[in-house]
Length: 231
Image (cartoon, rainbow, N blue to C red):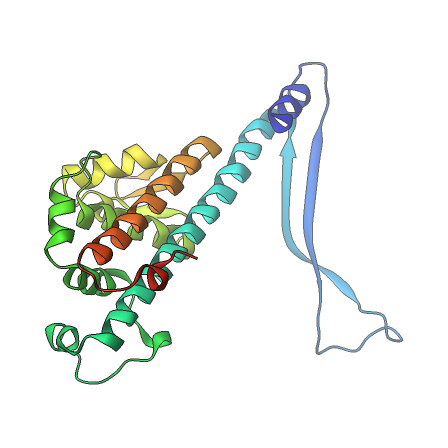
């Protein structure tokens, strides 16, 4: 825990410390100084004092962990798209089931709730049975909803999530609190936070959920094992 020891050293009462940074850029469409770029201050600065050094370190760790989670979710979503696409290409009845009148290119596969609906139908009864009875007591639809909303908040709203998005039910919120930390911004918004320990837990859940999809497809003999391999 080098960062933790560093923070403890910096915040020692006998230590004086200040760290500052500024965003310096150049303008690509302006003349250069004999080929040398001319830089200027944007006015964007950040200053860290001894008193808030520990807070700043925790903020950076949380930010990086949240981004790592977002990437993990996107990998899961990519895998589900691959599964649904394979089903579309090899099962005409599935196209009729989801009311898809023509073939869809892989890059045009939907994400979010629409993707989840397709996966639910593609997996058949085994999906519902696994969601209803598993040793984690995870309800797949609500679980997906929370994961998706948090990923969207991290990627598009600086990790600020609307409370209404993760409190659709008491179960939704229980999943959210189990996997993520947060601070209250106002009565409508939470700021999502993660540390290394929680990140490890949530990525394990993401991977296990992906495996459940793999298992449901396999039980229904939708695909051969090689076609479903997680990459």
